[in-house]
Image (cartoon, rainbow, N blue to C red; front, side):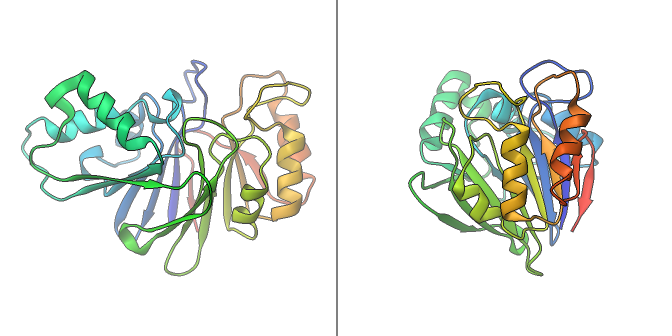
Length: 254
């Protein structure tokens, strides 16, 4: 399994870090996780044509995590040399189907497929969810402590390698359970300690998560601009869990 960081940033404009977006590849399948603005271009830089994606999975419906859904559908629906006919499945939390319907009502036929099925599977917001994905991947989910239908995601490959995405969240017992012993944890670290912004994690919270879950590697994403981000990375790594701050384009082979 390969995990590529397409967007390691936030909603704050940054020339080097786009909004959230990740690519999970396994068994020849390419699964896009989230996708804020500019994800299509960053996919292309990673050597992947958005028209070749096998599935979409979303942690939640905030703009910095799903803004490129409409552009992805647009590039799939507008006629080109290659016409997609195979299904595009989408997994997300409850409420996503009506969200997509509203997008399609706004943009019209440009993002309504006519040559391929678009299947939305909603996952529960009140307990665990599970789904079988392309490439033999198994997706397990638990509710995150955020809004807009937020979920934590765990992908398990046929060889039992695992990657977990926190999504946006406050400190969450569910995230500890899902991330326990995983090979790679891609975790938000939005805040500086002392900031009081609901629904997000600060370095002390991430350090506590690392201590309890003991992932094989911890990759920090979604860090709001701050004066000393490297110091936060060092503090979290002092738990004994190898930790780094993600950059757009980073790839991890599990």
